[in-house]
Image (cartoon, rainbow, N blue to C red; front, side):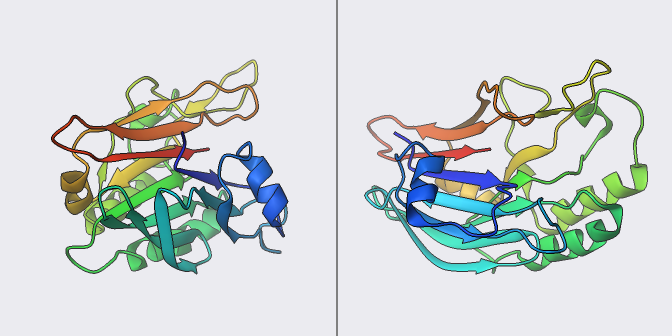
Length: 223
């Protein structure tokens, strides 16, 4: 059972209830939506879907590059801030994106989970060739440090995106990050890539399976 699903680059300017449910196979009925913009034309857009039996979502806000909301996992009454990102592909917009990223950092002691398609890499090993923008990589890394975020390790895949051409370009553009408070609340989380033939991005599944002493369970599907 998926409890929540996050989609980036939906390429949708509008979304109704039936279409939202269809996007996740009618497993999740509730949703919030950030549409594409004229600036991004057919790119962009974020959709978050969830199951009301397991998750409560409140105080949703959107920015140019993100959608954020307060999440409560009903089973354990644990609350955290969720931010879903779709980063720009155009170089001129990336400075605005990094400033917005730093600006959405929640107040101290707030559990924070940040995920999405950042369209940026942190380090040379996030790409399968040596054509690197070192300055932009440093700026991205600095922004994540200022937000006090740590990356959740992807267990079974090195790259999350492929250009799907003969001269293959591979990159790690999609990632989950969290702060120390979120990490302490969900200590047994694990992140895996799922197989797909429908996208040039690999869907990522973050889940936590806990034993009898820790009755906490959640799952986020991200693609």
